[in-house]
Length: 314
Image 1 (cartoon, one colour):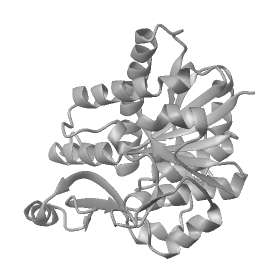
Image 2 (cartoon, one colour):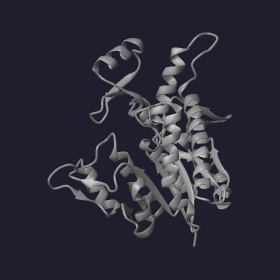
Image 3 (cartoon, helix red, strand yellow):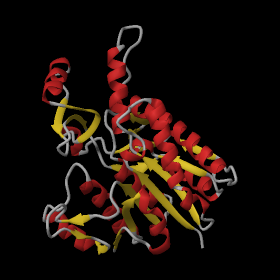
Image 4 (spheres, helix red, strand yellow):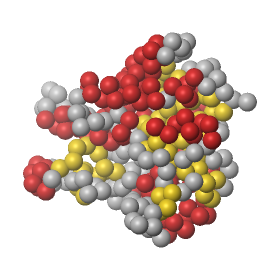
């Protein structure tokens, strides 16, 4: 029986210390090569989604640097769309090269520019939390605040300061029904890049809003709507840990939603890194009754062979 898996790629799958297009394309070629075990498996239908926080933040800075009446900067929702297309192009190139390198059939590789519906009254619009763009030290963030006094910056996991923007929860993927037949046709599909372009539903259709949706929550919604058998959230570590980096550190393997909720109440997962991944995985499991796994790209073959990683079940 075919197993449909939605794969959510972390930022480390795209961005390195070098933010150039060439370096990001190279990083994605490595990522595509690591995903070959999934692509090669005839019993797997794979759907890929990815983040875009660094890319969309960098693009906004480029837009503002060139802003003028004849060349106005684009709003945030449009910048999300632009980076979604940009990364989708890079991913298409990377997957095609990986297929050729591994002497596999050159199946179509498609990136669907995806709109994600959010609630206009979501409390997230009043409390920005989603980091975008580059890291700044204290001097750098002081300079940016002087230039853009309305921007909000927070310290991000000990790595510096980043701008934060609203990150409402996804309620629906506009293109979900159109995506399903693509998946069933043995097409490599990339959807909901960067969490999708945030829109609210209106009587006239949809209207873009200034936000960036968390890609893991969006991946959970995509997985639900395309009736995926698994949600696979890829990050920098093979497993989720409790008491992380402490002498009593413990690796989590198979855990229930209820157990994970207890760990969250204990404050076991960092808000800026592992917590949203755990919460997104739990939402998918709770809504569908199907499993979600958090692991690394490097652990992919073990995941396929024996369900290794941190597997969350009902």
